[in-house]
Length: 217
Image (cartoon, rainbow, N blue to C red):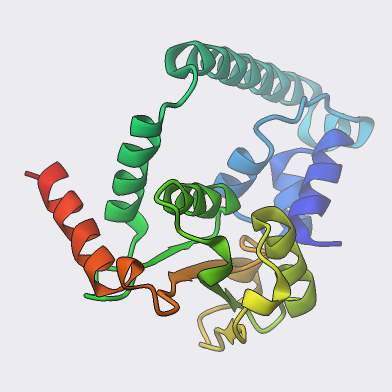
């Protein structure tokens, strides 16, 4: 079972972060983010090994955190409301400032969060850019399941297998299992191809650069 799924299952069963970290090799910060929505009720094993008072304190903290997250999300819905075309336009520029390629003539966004990649695609299509001109390449780890990762990204982005380039495997010695376990499906590099349409070639890259410069003034 993948580490993240195992962690989710163990938390639902009432195990502490310390126990889950030992079983999955995921960092405490990763677990804190990953399991933030999972209600926590210490099981008998946790009560015995951690102690009833400490386990109760942990459960109260988890409950307070979950309540705070829920309240924040409710407020966010009210604050943001529906996104206009202008909102999407500005969001896309902000996204590109942070995650986009700054190399002239290359239009690309890199991220491990499929929601960020989908925002980039939504931004592009708002200009009339055809999704079938996009190219996507996954950067994975030696123990990654390439077929599973490509299926995941294809399903979540709507990009067919024909638009996937050969996956890049990071074989650097420092990329150990602990690190790879935090990015089960790798990182997606999504590149805009002009496919002969000058509107989405070098001129488009220069226009994006000009937008960024204006925003950053």
